[in-house]
Amino acid sequence: MSENNFLNDVAFKKIKKEILNSYNVKDDITKPKVIFKEIDIENDKERMYDSSSDTYIPLKYIQFADGEIVISAISDYIDFAKGYYQLFSENLFSEKAFDYLFDFLSVKVKDFKLIPYTGNQAKEKYLSIFGLSDKADITYYNIQHSTIQFNSNTSNKNITHSYEELTPDRVYYGTLLGNKIVSIVGCNNAIQPLLSPTVVDIGLETHEDYRQNGYALSNVAAMSNYLVSEGHVVKYCCNNKNTNSIKTAISSGFKVVANEKTFWCVNPR
Image 1: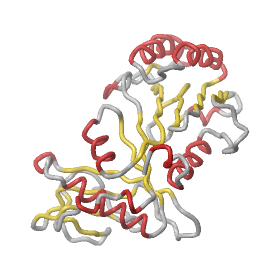
Image 2: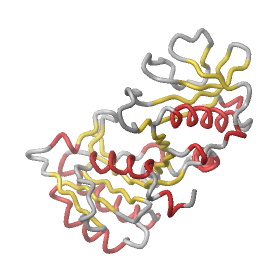
Image 3: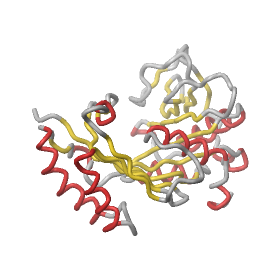
């Protein structure tokens, strides 16, 4: 499937709608190409706080594969966000843009008694979001005999350090060598009964001693086949610094839905 055709695909539309909803933006054809969403922290402070990462997010933005951009910022920074877009509209994900963003906000967030999170290359990295919903895109030739489907009742030992606590309402695929699961792909959200196509976010991990053997590709293909066959849309996310994960996504038939930059802040210790 070409990138242009993918923009009309159910995967792109479904994932984009889900993301727009998280930005509190309606998915309709009358939207401008660039949308600025202002967060009034006096009345909507919870939208600045991300409980999953225990961080505060005064500004974030996303650019979809169709060119649409949404920039979300607290009221104090909305004018900055508009100027930022004007300066870097040609490449919102460049190192120069990130330096400018960091230099400004790292000073300003002190007014909220916060500091920017700088661990794990947070300054430079951003999230790449991929999608798949067409069985024709699945790389079946990657599936190996060692890939199996299993659930939370498995007696095999997972040694990957991911999905250590398996959830009953999820599905997992993994590479089984002996009684060890050395590579795993799991669902990050519950698979709901199929009423309409559901977006299922998947994640993966391969034990460091078993990488470069095609296990991740095998498990992603098997998981994608299962989910798409059940009518679901598959979402795959990874940060831009994880080049191996991006290669896995592309080699597995996924197409880019969007890139998202988030500026995380934490309380000083």
